[in-house]
Image (tube, rainbow over all chains, first blue to last red; front, side):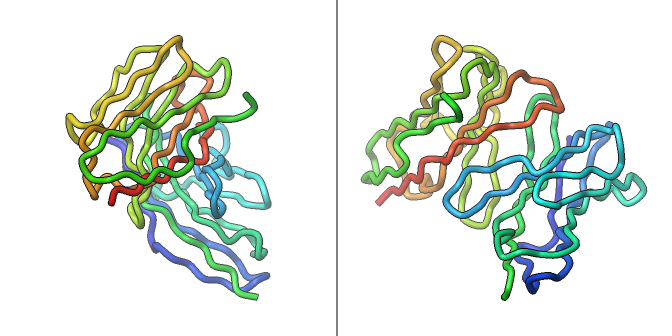
Length: 111
Length: 115
């Protein structure tokens, strides 16, 4: 069965610093991987998805993620954090027709 | 509608009462999902609908939980004899089809508090 593990329930960065949110997956077949973001008091929305077309995936708001099969990772990065990036981020993998989510990482951005 | 709509946005109930949570998916979306989000525990899959049928009910925590979908559109999640551990945010999502690479569109959720 597919699963994802997010390392770090909380990450704090300074405005303008690099954002790195870690996600490792477990899958017996080539996975479809996703990052979703949940802003305060809002529903989740898709940031980006990996479907094997390219290992480096660019998403909305300047985020990108790189699929590394050798490391079974799909870490999310952004070169320069903005205050508006403060939110909870979820890595997810599709298991058949079902999307399985990680526990989430809350990102804090300090001024 | 333009997005996934859930009602009510907040529900406070007493232990032992039944509650119904409603989800109105994006028009034309055939797949509908219910998740539960508890504090610090991520999203827990509850049930999935393709059209009106529910091929996967594996995530329902107990027989107190049930869900139905009518007309391939609106879905209702019912929790009978609520317990305090049922307190959580219940999220509904829909997708255009059941493809493995389909993205989910989420509603804003129903915050359920069981006193």
